[in-house]
Amino acid sequence: MHISTLVLLGATTIQASVLVERAVENGPCTGAGGAPGVCIPTAKCTVDGGNYISNACPGLPNDIKCCTKASCGSGGNCRFSSTCSGTSLSGLCPGPADFKCCVPSSGGTSGPYPPPAIPSVGACKAASVSGAQKVVAGNPGKVRQIYCTRDCSCPGSSDHCCGLAIDFMCSSAGGVRTDIGGPIAEWVMNNRASLGLKYVIWGQKIWNPSQDSVKPWSQWRGMDDRGSITANHWDHVHVSFNG
Image (tube, rainbow, N blue to C red; front, side):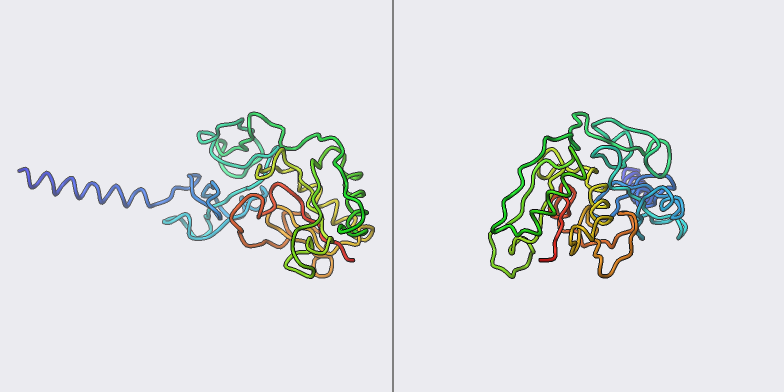
């Protein structure tokens, strides 16, 4: 009798494990880069501004995939309200009613900020200084700090090496995610001619006037996950200029 009980418990454990591995429509899943997601039809995900990946909602029809939305509200992202330690906002995320925009309770990830110091022409080239002045003037209160040069040889792996790039820091601190960079990045795209724009990066997406048409940031070309908020450009807008 004792042996039978063990066998039954073992069978129950195996059955429970199988159930855990099977996803549920409108239930949680894990999206690209470990982002919290929800299993919903792809059309619903796209129309609400989300992005989906395959093979993250096992056991469901092919058209139901794991949908995430990385930026919403003021420095928030979409997740189930039960996992949000900040404030949950409705109407900003795809999926069921309890999949909401979670924003930090402290706020302050999007300014307003006083005008940042702009570097002088020198190692930071004139095109970058002029571009920085125009971006700050066109986006008042949204840029906290500006970086131009980097300690590397020119030419190098980055336009910062030659003083031909500006990082517009737009969150409350480095490594703190915000959504305010989206409007700045689109402003840069729309003013590409006057800026002498080479390319602009924000939120793991890139736009280049030599190969991309004018479109919302959500439709820009995606970039590989570089492993951190700063490396993926979620706390600053990178703008490279033609020298």
